[in-house]
Length: 151
Image 1 (cartoon, rainbow, N blue to C red):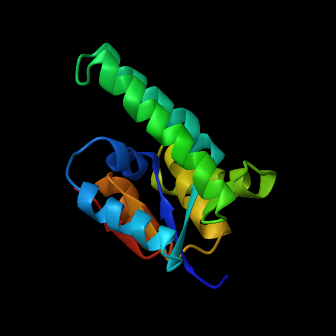
Image 2: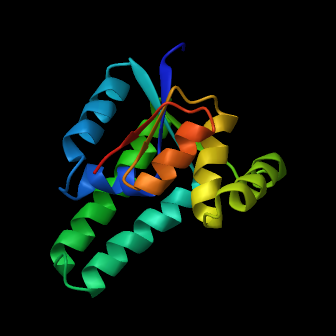
């Protein structure tokens, strides 16, 4: 499969399940993946971050308990479906990726999780990096990734 690879950070993944600025672009990316035009990639780290964000939204009252159950279930079901269809690349946390993340942390003064996103995207030679974080978008650009800030 020679489809282009689009890396989604946690904030971009969340936009698939909770309507906010950037949701329409993320929906387009998922549609392109399901039609075989692209493959979606993200770090295994993102799964926990996304689940944590859904839980936090529920605890803070941004989403109701029922909506939390719905978005969590949709996310986990879609993960399984996309893996079966071979349109999702889940990047493991490897020493090589961590070493690159550490370099990014020290160079740009970002959190480990953010640096891991950029290092993971570079690891799979992503054609595009999508994020809801403007600072992370700028780091990705400086690191040579094509990037879009979903704000």
